[in-house]
Every structure is written in structure tokens, then in C-alpha cells.
Image (cartoon, rainbow, N blue to C red):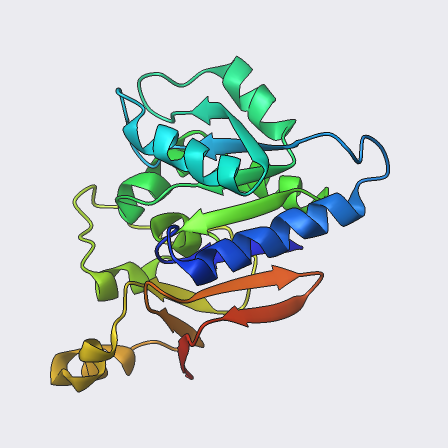
Length: 217
């Protein structure tokens, strides 16, 4: 597997996590080793001006990769864009409303498609909401303030790892009594990731970038 779990994509440790995925892709390529790595992007919700997409393009450009495929899951969904996305070396799952993002992926029946993409050797890079969607379920989204406005009842997600992920968790959270009580409700290992930390998994090896905290069930 080639996975990256990011809280803030602009942090130094997020870049290290992304680079670990990109380097693994380069290593695994048997042909076109000199070709640019192609990245696809799935928007968590409509981004008509492509604001976040363009910002992410610049991020990957600085890391010597090409972000050139944009997929929206709602009103502008395109089958041709989906096909182009699946032809990429890696897919970037954007941040945003975690519940809305997962609901749209389920509506398009894309969870098994993305799992197969990973099985076939593709990389997944998830930011905040996108990172949570790579785990067994998105129940941890409440820890960073997400609300289930779309009344999603099935919170199961890609289930690519055996832990949950909560982004944007600063040291201040651990001094809050309510937060500590919330942690007790989780029955799986939970990565509590500050904005300057990240994780990557390369060929089943877990790499910690910065100092993410862990809450064990």
C-alpha cells in the first residue's frame, strides 16, 4: 500500500508523507521511470472556481508531480473524468465536510473502486476529511467539529487500515475534559494528528512524520 494521512497539506511533515508515497510510486514503476507522476483529485464537495484544486496543483508542482485530473462527485460528475482519475498513479482525497464527502462516494459506488485502485498499486493521499475516509469509518470526524448534516447513517469508509484518524488535534484538546470523555467512546486505535504531523504507510510499514498522538482502545 501507498497511503498518506494528512491534517494540513501545507505543513513540512505533510510534504514528507506525500513524498514517501511519490517515492514509492517511482520505485514501483517498471516503465516510463522518467515520466512525471500523475495525480488525480477528488473534491469533497463542489468547488466551482477550482480554488482548492488549484492550490493543490501548486503543492504537487513543488513536489515534482503533476495534478491534472479533477473529479467532482455531485452536479458536475463525469464518467470520463473518473476514467482519467483511475489511470493516475495516485489520487488526492480533498479536505472538507467528511459526512458529505463519504455520502457522495457511496452514492457513486466509488468505495470498492478506490479500494481496488489501492490493491492495483495506486497511491492514496488523504487530507483531513479525505484521510478519515481511508480508515474503517468516519466516526472520528466529530472530534474535529464535523456535523452529520446529511443524516448519513452508515459511517463505514474505505477500511484500508485498522485505525481511525482525527485531524487538527492540537495539544490544547488534551486539556479539555469533554474531549477526554469523547475519546473513551472509541473502540479502535485512534491517531490524533496535529496540523504539523502526518502518517504514511508504504508497503505495510507505518511511518510517523512529526509527533502524532495515539489513543488506544
